[in-house]
Image (cartoon, rainbow, N blue to C red):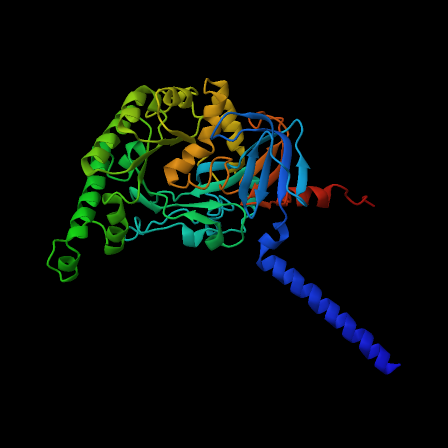
Length: 432
């Protein structure tokens, strides 16, 4: 009897061990959970790379788009999602956010957006501070946003540091990272003036000095190391970070709003031969032809219209007018908690004159082109990463909900902290 008990116990231990091993294996390799091909059928597909497919099929295999079109055969054994009456688009991209850097705005210990250490502001990078387990990421993901550019915020310096582009489907930053650095971030205009003694001219001068020093440092590293070069305004770490900018390898993203500040920034970029990205540009529509002529893309929040002294020409039609002028426009929330509202911002841009397909590009492929990942993301084409969202209807309608979210072929859970709290407190115990 004891022997039989031992055998049963041994079998139980073996079963438990095997189960744990399987769980560990699937946890360590999430792709094993989604190895099965997926076919999304009967959907209205917005591939972005071409015309809308009124009723078509998207096939996902091994994390990529394997087929898309109106007459696509469903692979044997594939999981089929019937999307009749529904809309399929690429996953959306928030082109400027602080996701993973901020958890609770009023608690300093949960904020990693910036540094006030003037010795390393340009060298500051967000990558080592991103929290992939932030509760804000699932909340954003269930609204159809699959990727985000995480950017630093300026502390006391004109130059904030470098950002990174991540997807929202992993639990390790290294696995989520798609572009690093995206750009070197800086501010001019009113914000820059406040960091440079009060004048916009002083802010431009400070930024010019930093760029000139970086260019000189790049040509005289040995002399600098041997103390045979003049002192530079930035620290060595900042100079190293700025060298790729002045050499055209990394873009300079500058936050500006007033039309005159935008034009001054365009001149600065031309003088140094920089790859420029304009951020914010509330008055951009007033100088849209200049921006388009310079071939400079813009990242903006389309719902800005409250005037301030440097934004007197603020308009909800800003995005539409810039797009009409031929500017590459990408949308952003510049936020963490409200990154989930990106589709609402895009919908309002449509309401104020931007074509629907242009607004879709502004939350997908336009940003992918700016950040250099359009060869693998931003459209539903064969070979692209399978960042795919199934919507109940038009994604820009407030009443539309997300049915399914896939990031690189893996379906994302709909569970969020908010949903868990709802279920927890849906039924409260009766008071005595």
